[in-house]
Length: 464
Image (cartoon, rainbow, N blue to C red; front, side):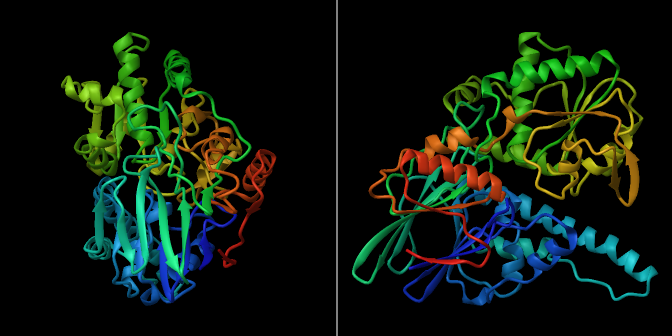
């Protein structure tokens, strides 16, 4: 068996790993690459293999850097099964359609510029119709139930504790008269986070593909989420400003809403208007309500008691573009939560353009920001940023709350991987992390006594 790394190798986006087994090919994830525009466009359009040659796809979760090029691979000829959890399937139905809409709008915007320069128009990466076609191939499965992937290969999903429906994958592979166990962590979540369950251990394997997003870095404890959020909100309220939150529509938005629910109930915060300006986040929140099997005990108890932690009276869900534009006219303190989480597309760009120059305002960063994204430039406190081709001075306060991160930090990754038996786990491959982060995790694992820990380059192959 050979593992080939074609995405999220020494970077955090575009998750895509291929298993060559008994003459067949299994793809683990098929995510969109996000980064410099020209490079992202090229990598997302041109697969490093023939999509028709893939026999099956196993998807860890619905985040676009893991699922976002499924419509693209189907558009280019893939017709095999796409296996994932039931909640991931439901989330992908709305998220991939939304991504298709964004792809079309981006192409439309770019084509207007190309037309002015008398250049040939481009075709969108894919559209909503392509997303719909890809959904016909999805198979939504339960956690902890073994299922056949291809002949002589079975798999099982374990709760990864990252977002609703997220899974790590354990594959049992029979080849050449031997049986091998291969694990893929997907994105590992954190312990004691609100709403969803803690990460579940998959059991021992001989080879492990693990994310390394925050290798060597530590987050604030989840227990501090409310305290820090309340402090920054009060500071902004007292100076008459707005809080602008770029948030991933799935996971982070629901965590913030749940935390606000607690703070308002306790009387810790005054009841300022909260706007969720993302149709996708609204649809995703509806899906959360349908999948209580993913909830931790506390959240499940809220649901049983007919409490609705996602539909508070003080939260206003914005659907139309007209409603979104009217938020620009609001002068009083409020919070606006909008996608995308890395500030690369969506309505958050309009809110940043309208609010980034006012020192009374706060931009609250609650998720990972990949290199070369607008979100990373905000975190790096660049004095000027470009939004829609216009340069804006950055005068708003930028605050980073890593306690909201849905990714395990360095110690939590060591905690998870440290459960594997060192004698049985012979190979570890670190992906989904910038090289420095992966190196830090590699060093930590070696100190724990794990032997062969690789940091693959894109296109590199390893025999297992």
